[in-house]
Length: 130
Image 1 (tube, helix red, strand yellow):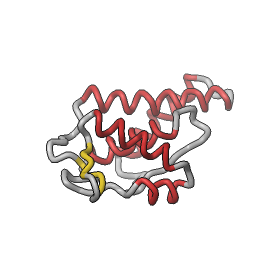
Image 2 (cartoon, helix red, strand yellow):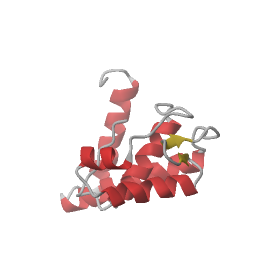
Image 3 (spheres, rainbow, N blue to C red):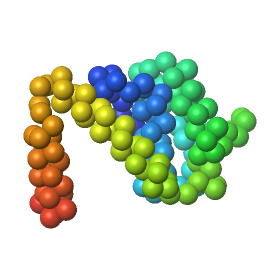
Image 4 (cartoon, rainbow, N blue to C red):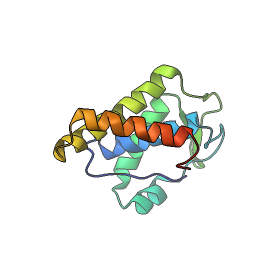
């Protein structure tokens, strides 16, 4: 499981982990029953406090996305299904917010951001940028 965190986008680290795990499940990269890395191992990999990973895992468990099996680890819930559209849009909204904050810090106007998004969309969907 590959997770990347950013300390500059304004999104709390536990939320970034939570969002990325949800994305990986929704995209089918994590399958029902698949084990997530142990809290300490993921914390070491990301060089963050284990409590941050524990908080993300707890939130995922509360949402029914993962299940914790005492003594064996944390697993993608067997009932986990691809994310509903509302959840997908929520994840994208958070990424858009981070992009807009970064653009504001770089003094890039909205019109240029929209043009860039359109250009990248065309490139990706025409197969050129792959």
